[in-house]
Length: 371
Image 1 (cartoon, rainbow, N blue to C red):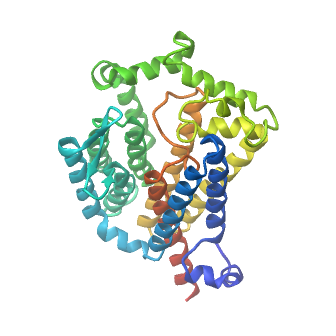
Image 2: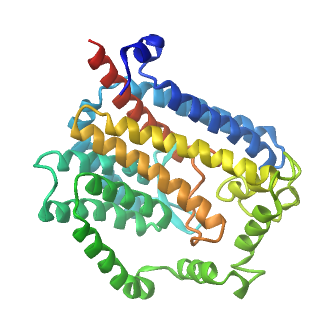
Image 3: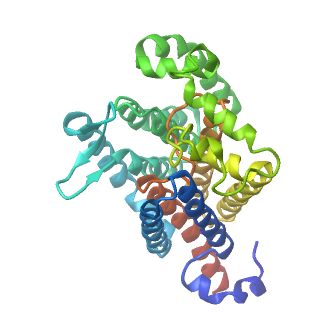
């Protein structure tokens, strides 16, 4: 808990509803992103300027959302969830296809990816639902919460977009867990998922998704085909050594052995150029953001804010875990970017919106305490 002296030290930050430590950590990640994208993108300044523009827009979104009292989100939760589900249905019926997936809605002047909205709408809805009854939540409440999570997860899975489906499902499950879901229910859920894997394998996954799992288990089965990407990624990570080869000096990335090196596989570029020391520093920065987010959530004024903040923070952790795991060969490749580092705009805006909510939770609480 912050003391009055600590709150008074930076009163202007409190008035702007900005958590200084979290803000600095996010800025550090975004600056790192620009350097790595310059290297991974073939030293093209156009990519750097495009990413810098997206970062600027994302921070504007963060600042605007941070000004809103978290309790206002509670009133919007059901509306955002229903709109999100409607947009996902519209994607399946009217969506625009690209790269073998139907994930976008064409609005004429721009395209939107509704699944990104559900990364926030699902924890909004679940936090609202879990706050309506006594804590810890009961079994029937868990079942209803699972259903509310399963609906958008399946709609996103059908696009198909396995990576986003995992993140949306995680955001809902984390709310239920933080709301007091018993370990017996957790164990039963794990057993149910495990028992359904054969059905999912034969009837739920597309052929390319099954191929990704087989490649994860044994990349060398097709070293010049499906296994090529992960083999080159592991070579890049391992060749960085302790200190790395130096910025712009990574052979795997500069000679274009690495696929998607400025998006999904950007961690491999970073590891090759900055080595183990750079990876430890990056993971420390990620760890600080996660710990800071959890502390903000624990200190929140009410249960709704605690559940919402905790889910946003732990979903960010899943982002980091899945991306680093997949490029290191520890998890199947599912197309999840490295948060705030990978090139891209939609996921970055969504994540910054989440951090804006965290800052609103932190700073509005401090202002109430100081009055």
